[in-house]
Image (cartoon, rainbow, N blue to C red; front, side, top):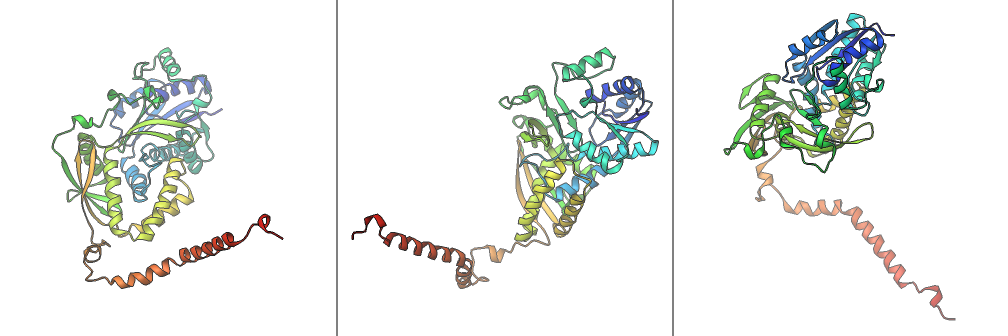
Length: 413
């Protein structure tokens, strides 16, 4: 039986009831770890709540800059987007939280680590793979795989029975996760993919219909594929994302409604608000188009898909992810420059791209033939077409041979 457990604590419904449940079930000491990844919540209140509901200690860990520089930026440089839409906001927040939690567990001599992830979701995998990579000797407690609670309604009932204050009600049943990169919504009417999201569900990004009637312009600067400036002003990673979040959210940019394939084999439906992320992914992609040669760009697309799967599956602390980082770091060395965007009522368009390492040449791209010899194309086409020409020749010979052959049954003596 564990004597000391470190819990990844958010103050939400699940983790709020886990503290009394751990104490009742195991009779153990519970230490709450509250990770600040930019969720814009009253973390001091969560700390007080953890202590009031039975935690022996509760710490607030400021992980914002580490989260951005060590998790968001590498994923952005890799161009990783899961299943065309999902910008991985929850996926890469889990390893930074789990890493700090495991480090605290080792430091305080804990016997176990606990989380509030459900038994049907992806997050249980993400947390536990991180635990196993950083503190493999510690026991893992996943209450949702042990207790008799089977639904949000049951959890609400348990909280009320144990005098645990919660925000969720049966009328407001959404499960939400927020950090500096995104805000996710699951449950409620979203569980039926035939239902449109309720307008009242969205909490961050304004409705495009209510966005300003005047477009906004913004310029984002990159060095080595990493965002470093907004409108020509260099800013730190936290301030950069916060500035772009405010701008995009005001103009209705960044809402996503997605049916996705969970790692555990279930299709799920979620709604995501990712304002700054939407701008940064688009701007980065446009700058890559200017700076990367064709072969590198196309190969990077293949690796981007794999990188997105690695992040989504919780395989952050693996040799493959580190190796892919090395590839992208090299490929991104000359992804340097600026991209201009125009935001208008939920839409984003690219207005300009500029880089000292641009591979775009106006003299070659224009209709002018001054620096291009069209006759050279003839030989290139002939060589490039050799496999096609040879295949066509063989096919033609086979066709002639077949059509000229008289069927055996038709032969006369």
